[in-house]
Length: 166
Image (cartoon, rainbow, N blue to C red):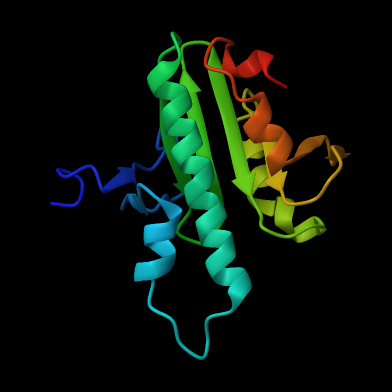
């Protein structure tokens, strides 16, 4: 019902030519991060970072969907997660587009933050992988572009193909 009312959407799992056992259930997002933050259950085990991280991921999802809606290039949006728990937040896939994006709400990047992207790149060497984070500088770690979220949001232009943005 939430999807019918355009209050939420689901991202399907990327399963094309999967080499690993992949989770089969879609990811669920509210159309607005404010609604997510208001409705999300909270308890003593929830940290501000957990909530902020999920909210930032939802914000990126909203921007990617808007980019898709206004772009002439037709792409599909997915996520990827193995049964062992390795995950990539967003896969952008289309005729000439194949990107994997991981979103972290931290201001620094730790080597383990790149594990999902490295695993995805191992399975799909054709993909361009990228980390979005809350830091201030553009970095390249283990041949992965690490881009500040603020820069990503300002560069996202539906008049340009996704691969030409970065």
